[in-house]
Image 1 (tube, rainbow, N blue to C red):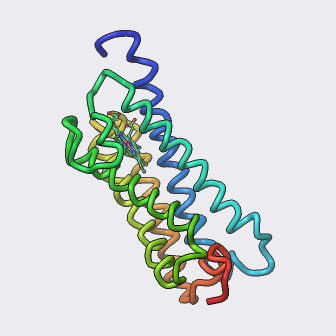
Image 2: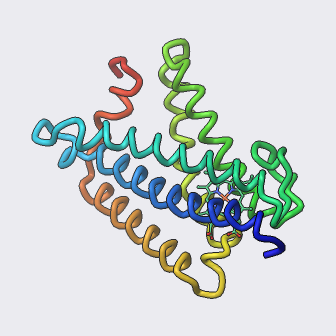
Image 3: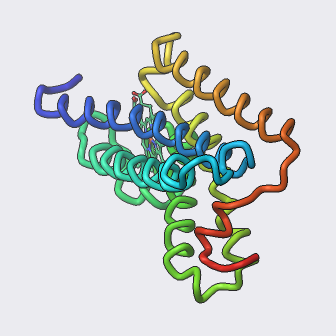
Length: 193
Ligand code: HEM
């Protein structure tokens, strides 16, 4: 650490990043769960599946934004403002920061296309929305390779591994249930399939 003035921003960057990653994992877990009949049936209230998924996703986005802004304002490492949206522009850990940048770009794409979804053919909107599946793996590797808290076997490494196991279980449950996805895509799109 070069100076005290940089420390609060640097810790905010790391703290919000960790919270964002945990929320992102929760959002993925709920998203997968909400497409299973066992969870997304009439016996489960909407707020326990789709609404929770949506709200956790929005909260994750808020933490991602703070993570990015504090990274850019911080002087401890220099990544440059373009690194927020253009992959490959960060002088600091170029490749691994780029994965975070791409994850953020995908999030922006999904949000913008969801805002104008009524103007898009459902098939196009859905194809774009599915790209959200790339966000978590990108954030996972970004965390593993860029994060101070995952380096040298620190707690971040175990958090990363725990998050991966949670999602493997969710996907395995979904595959073994053998259900046709229902619910969220249709209701988010607000139109019949
Ligand atoms: C969906 C988007 C993103 C997510 C979920 C995310 C998540 C994370 C996580 C979990 C860490 C590890 C923090 C730690 O070890 O304490 C991290 C580190 C970092 N991220 Fe991101 N990030 C994202 C986007 C970005 C973007 C766009 C940039 C560049 C502007 C960026 C720059 C950094 C930097 C420089 C670090 C290193 C901090 C450290 O050494 O601990 N991230 N990010």
